[in-house]
Image (cartoon, rainbow, N blue to C red):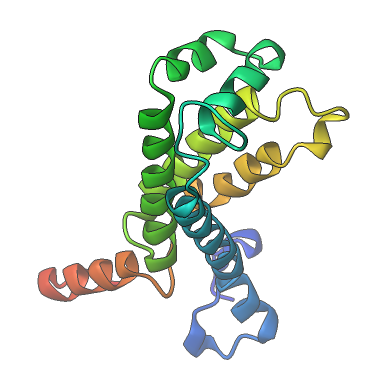
Length: 176
């Protein structure tokens, strides 16, 4: 270690001969990105292809779901607003999940995609899964927490964002 460098801020580079833990640390967010990206992509596609979901009423419809959770949600006004046009709201959620899933998987505008995922998860937690008792039975709160590391760190590896950053550095002559 060089003089003046604090041990707690040292971050080995791949060419420093670091051990497997250094590599694992650098790639730690990749499995989270893959999981969240695939899950949100699947959730969006599932909603769009479910003929019962995109209806105002009926078993499995977005409209019936919203009427069912309205009185147990933390923010009934949010459910009321969405209930004014449940099918449009269903499409908005499904398309949002698709965009979040694709952005997260590709690592394209990752922080923005992760923020979108966090906001979707937050809104679903405050409405659909708010009444889960105990709270950890509801799945939207853990998803909300899972998005936070990606909001903070983005996708520094194996991502379009990283490739664009490297290309920009190369073009401007910025050091790495």
